[in-house]
Image 1 (tube, rainbow, N blue to C red):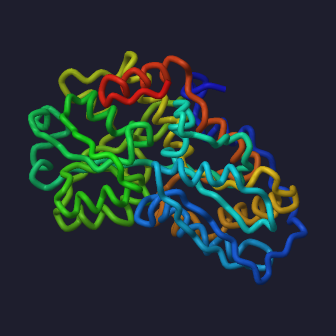
Image 2: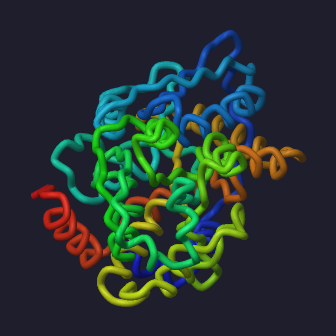
Image 3: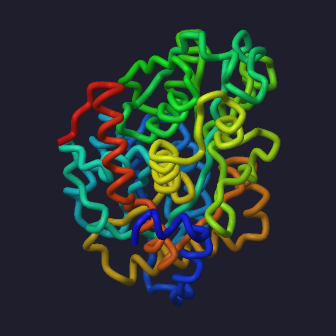
Length: 362
């Protein structure tokens, strides 16, 4: 399965077609136990908000209603935590691990620091997200739906690293002809937002949960101006407006309005391939690979129950956005979407990383 296959049809439709009904409730009891949900980022970013949203709902739905505690293990753009999880084994079903696109991309690019293998883990839930790029107030007044008036501005951006999910905004800004200088080394996108708030950066992007929870207030107060979203996929794999932010133009729209930016060709194909790998299925929850099936089933049933709550659509749209959530076999299909890109897109990005940032992964 490759991204070239996936962009010809909706990711959601593909995963739905692969889905199988959730198993019957497993005979597992977590009474009196604490589940540790480890997130390999700092506590200020979108992954933190995602896990903190689902954790109490999962606690209510798991048999025995254990306490679900979100713990953070930032470092190396999430590679530290993922390498750690690779070495963990099942004990009693009380360890859950959450990944994001910044964990997926080094894996896709064969980063030598990666010592984890997604196929060794058991996915039990996956969800999509979006992303919003925004400007400071001073530069925001220049934005007219195109980047034409922004090309002479020197932008500073707090980044987790060019091989992480940040490659999506960094490549997009370069395609628009903007001068964006990344400051590498932050431990989560929330730290990038804090740089923006302190005036140390004048451009930023957040995934939907991070934007809703931390950046939207900056927009409301006039400190930030939305520039674009990355968009969403329609039933035919076309990029359309993000359902969570329907009033904000997509990168595709801004590119089409900007002199010199093309929505066809190698750069566009590579950008779209990594967007598809990084956003429609961005955040995944895993159990260790040797977890017994009855425990896997218990988590599958619990996450299914969470998504079937009568208030789920309302509360999730306010905290993490309006995106699909996949469980069970749907999460397995989602994992394949998130961990495959075609060779041409990978080759383009590897060459771009070398030319733009001096990063060589071979």
